[in-house]
Length: 371
Image (cartoon, rainbow, N blue to C red; front, side, top):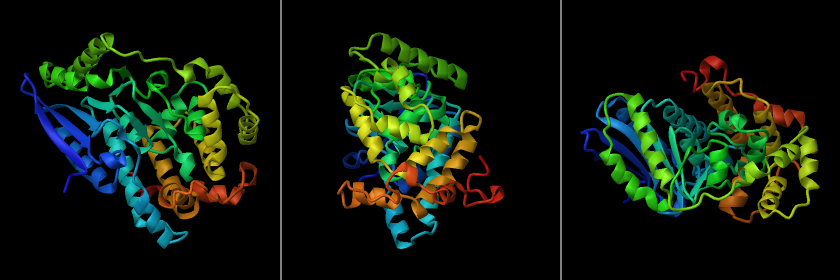
């Protein structure tokens, strides 16, 4: 039986080692299940304190995806079997996923993420935690949770609110697929290489003089990636997000009903914007309200506070939100015809929204209280 995640250590000329994590369910686009989350957390904690490990690399098997998100089927089945109740499956998956994401953000040693191909949802949660986030000409990065009755979690409350203008809100509402130029513009990635550069990169990593200083190792990795990027063989192309920043800000201005009206009445020749419009208008009205609530958090909360906020909402979405219906329509029955609890954003009741936004835990009992 193949392992869902593979761990290797690579030797280097300096005597230090590189820890490599490879997500290994190619046919499922390397989507994360709870076993993978647990195995990665355990291994990364060991490498974090191992003086011989200079840096960690995360990549995905195959050439289609780094990671297309979380494998949410187990949560769906548990939630369907226990209607209107918080399940252990939902609580454990999201708790442990966010603990893994937070570990990466706080890792200390360099974490290089090879963000080639599809990087969505939970995959972006992993990538956001990396210190060195490499994009390629094949990168397609999105937070498509609105299509399954969720909202951009895995730290989205932190990184979306730190993007230029209203782009974070736009990405959350529309599931827009960023290319590499977009992702660099909004700081989801910070380096660009060709997809064919993966093997040369690993060869070059083995030749770097790694040492005991994490600061020096960060600088060495940055320098290596800059040199390779200066000689990259492919064009990065244009960023629609950068080019149309002002129009996006206008489209996303006002309250939720203003934005819904602006998107509904939008007429555009731009294919990417039409796709974004279609996804937003087909998305869960409850999710629209969650995305707006998330945007209103601003930049005041710490990363730990953001994960704590998200955990309550994520488990609530599973027990009394649109999550089960969204997963049914997209992944189970695959009819792509979700019957959302509310027909449009103006019909969402204050009570329904409050039920999603109210944490199931008191602060002292919160599963992430020790962050």
